[in-house]
Image (cartoon, rainbow, N blue to C red; front, top):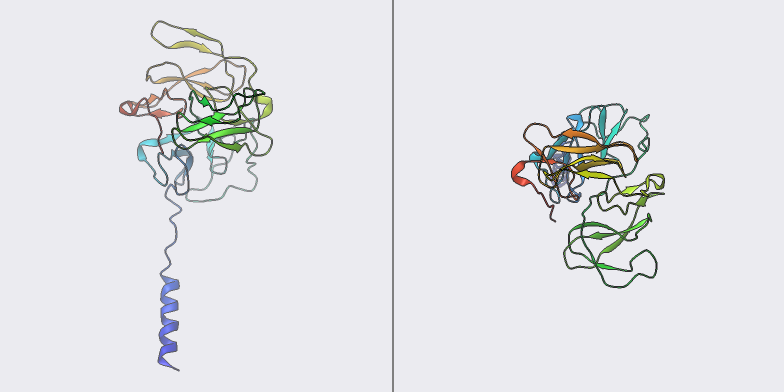
Length: 260
């Protein structure tokens, strides 16, 4: 056989055998935006929050609430679901990714005060100039469209919630939600002298700060219209006061404002 042919075959075999495979046992923020949540392949009850494109920060490694597991397809913790095998990248076939009352991917959120470029003729705006990075409601009522702000002083990009989901106009919870979960009233709170509130009526499912300053306690809402449950961050972590990042963070990082 021709020596050149043998050399080509040898190189082809070497190249195939040397292909580097992606390590499925490591958290992966590649292709993700800041604030996207990704699974911990070693523990189905934990997840990471991406702090920059393609970067996994070990400081932002969190645990789902008790009884929940992290669903990588939804990008959130869900209750009463089987635990995914460590280092597996698939969900068991019998797990329904939409089997919760808020079966939508939680979108990152901010609470900016956008400058409107045009006066709306309905309850929706025509365009905005972004004052912060994050997501902003396009309408005062629950509609599918919202704005994505990727940089300050740029025009907001119109996005649409998937399926039949709508964007929540409540500034404390800017996510795509089910229409049935759309808030109709403002949360009722009672303020205490130390800048913390003693109670909260939930307008959406999620976690919300209990205080204006960085403290360990926060409210956990599981049902719209129910009273928020007071919970505490683990170890020495405190709850972030910036609505764009409603998680427990290191005290030195609070308040944490995510940046692109």
